[in-house]
Image (cartoon, rainbow over the protein chains, first blue to last red):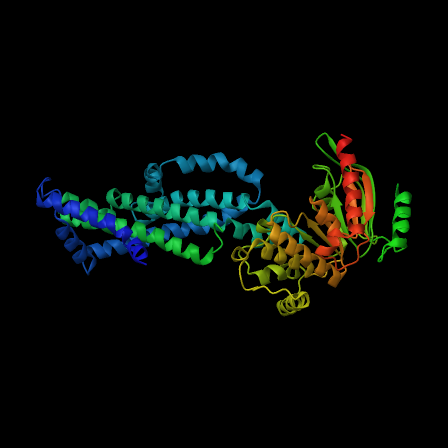
Length: 253
Length: 274
């Protein structure tokens, strides 16, 4: 009983240790206080920024862009991945192209997308969608291709048509892998969006927030924006994990 | 070969309590050929499977036991020959198939009940009737299982029971089982043998069982099909005269012991022939 209660506190230990160490560093002034403000100052900036301040607005902007890009990526990549994965020959013939662009840093695509879409939201969202799409596509296709042979055979023995097998078996078999793709894709999309917000003529968003605070030397605000970005990344991952646990209850069992 | 087999069956039938002698065979296999790469597994193989009997297929490792039932069930194509069920092909009849690997054969995203009802969905049966027929089967078999569970929440034996029920729900004309209990522990295997025997006695469905356990093969079967090494021939097609329901006591009865010893002898002869 006591050990169980202690177990629940374990994840907090790292956080407390980090904040304690940070407090010690600022209190002993081991680092220039202008570069590293105290935790209290940083959290105050975070709280004020998120509570009706500019940071909250930037946070929402980044959430919107990330959500839009992952939605576009998923809508394109999931059906396409199922289609490509259902025929191994088809996937093998496109595998090199997919792997090549999956390995290309999406940030290298910014200039191209700037030419195509200009300096608005479209560019940021489409580059992030492009990166996330390839990650999701690759995972979905592999999920479909790795569907258990016995299960496909079982469906066939029971008289399922090819289309039935695709929707009743392959699609569901690929779901755990699809969620792996979605989680990796959303992490990548967030990275691309934040970078884009820093440098691609942006007026808002968390990337802009971090960059502007740094330019103005408002260090507590900069740390606050970094935390907001971290919380967003962690939260998105957690959200997908919870959705996965709800809808893909059989994964790993 | 066929003629001598028929004679054997008749001769044995005189002593056996439930002979199928004289009845038209359910499945007729003629001139079956199959090769994998350079290995000839079956070459002009003939076999008649009697109606309403449980046939165990037993033989040396790699002789093509599973290949045989997979070809009969249409899971793998034949290279030559003909397999007919009362003159019909496999596509024209209702049949059930139980895989060795229940974990991969069931659908983990469906509850046990929906797994069992799935073949009815493939037959375009309405949801209401699917439910009714599945419930009827469950009640008829008298199996106490919580069918609201997902397969991964069940024990291995329970999952395999669900697989067997899924195969039976369409009221198949013939049931195939490919080493259905070999992934279960011994205790569960013994329990499942009883379940299968009971199901067979209830339904009387022609059943073909592949087994790698001689005692199990003899215990469950009306006839044991003993295969040679490949290219597979029928080494023997031995009737098992012990009356059903068979119990633990059956295992030590002279008739059973004698049949089992005979099968073992034939098996050993075929193994050494290599």
